[in-house]
Image 1 (cartoon, rainbow, N blue to C red):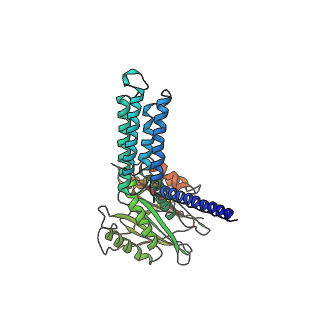
Image 2: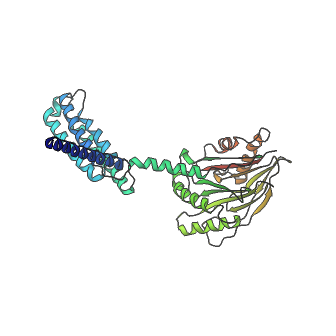
Image 3: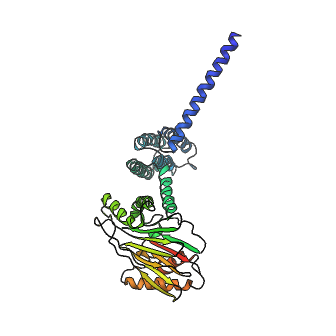
Amino acid sequence: MTGGAKADSYTARMRKSLHRARNAVRKSGVDYFRGDGSDWIALVGLMLTVPGIAFATMAIPVWFAPSALVLPIVAGGLLLRPSSLLSLYAVAATALIVESLVLGPYDQGPATVTPGTVLVVAACGLFGLLIAQFRARVGVPWRRGGTMLFDLRERIRVQSALPQLPKGWHREMALRPAGGQSFSGDFVVAARTNGGRTLEVVLTDVSGKGMDAGSRALLLSGAFGGLLGSLPPHDFLPAANGYLLRQDWDEGFATSIHLVLDLESGEYELLSAGHLPALQLHAGSGRWEEMAGEGPLLGVYDRAEFDPVKGSLLPGDVLMLFTDGLVEAPGRDLSEGIDRLSGEADRYVAAGFEGAAWHLIEAVAKDVNDDRALLLICREG
């Protein structure tokens, strides 16, 4: 009985030890791929790969060239920290020396270590080290970098989503960043306030374009989204202006237009901070009218004042908000671009504006190297 108890106790201890070891390895792997843990697992795996490749090269040189050592080196550049990467390079250099000794001088056959092989492996090692140093300086591992960028893009997209409107209203927005990139300096924040009766929409154009303005647009969209609905409509742009001034950016200005629309009566106010005028289609006359509020750029000077312009959307009317990338072009007057936009929009008057925002950007400013955003609010007849 005593011997059996000791055996059971020993087996239990072994199981607990294996369980703890397995949990430790699993935790290290999870932490590593989240970018929080040590990279020893990847380092050990790559170091074991190097002698395997070297052995295969010496045994079957026809199928495994000496330059195959660049594979773990490239993988190390993506997976390892700079200090660990140097250890991997030392192992790879040792393997290359052993291969050259076993396979013989490079002038005795093609399957040998030539000076070109050494240069290729060294060049890949240099590029991998540069990539690893850049990642270490940024502080974002490659495993999370792409995920973070994707998450940032999705946050901007979600924040720019327009709320559902009651029956009798149609809204849509199209956003096209410069150069086909995923990040834009143009963004929209919107909310229904006053118990759902009022629609507030803010269209903003941050200085710069594409990736250069994307980070500032993300920060501002979060701040503006928090301000919108938390303040009376006339206090929003002054608060946004003060926020930009506190950032003290080199390129800290932005243009913005704030729409406050009563969804029951159709009456609205437009407050502008150096932004282009909105265009309203009057269904009765079939003409477009520019609706322009007055106010300076955001982030230029303190205690700026923003004077609203008032209007009303009757059944069949359309209100169009847009950024300068849609109508500005070198060598062309701004009024020409606005006329061209309204002319293209006339084509949708009879059939309706559903799906028109994206097509208007394609028709008016498809190949413009600037961020473009277009917002349509339609009161159905």
